[in-house]
Image (cartoon, rainbow, N blue to C red; front, side):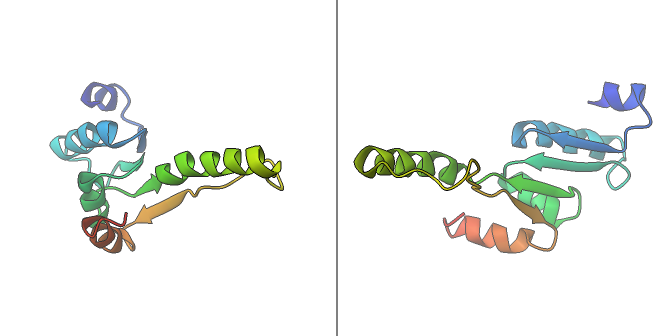
Length: 116
């Protein structure tokens, strides 16, 4: 990440595909003194991601609602298998939600309570 930032000084944002990419990107931005100058965002949540968002070191995280992504297909398959029910349209949204600095503390509390 540091090599990419050095080779491409015009980079002004990084979007990672999850906490395993966000953690090293966050560390690289800290080490290079680029926090706040280069925006960082990611998919999915972790304690480190939530704390970085709360502290203003990360812009947002996209919360994909993985539970619903696994649960709803089973419900839909069961309904189809038992009643031939189908969904009304081609898209069934399971989110996504966005965790921002305004909501991070609340999501941290929900996560600690085991509901998120």
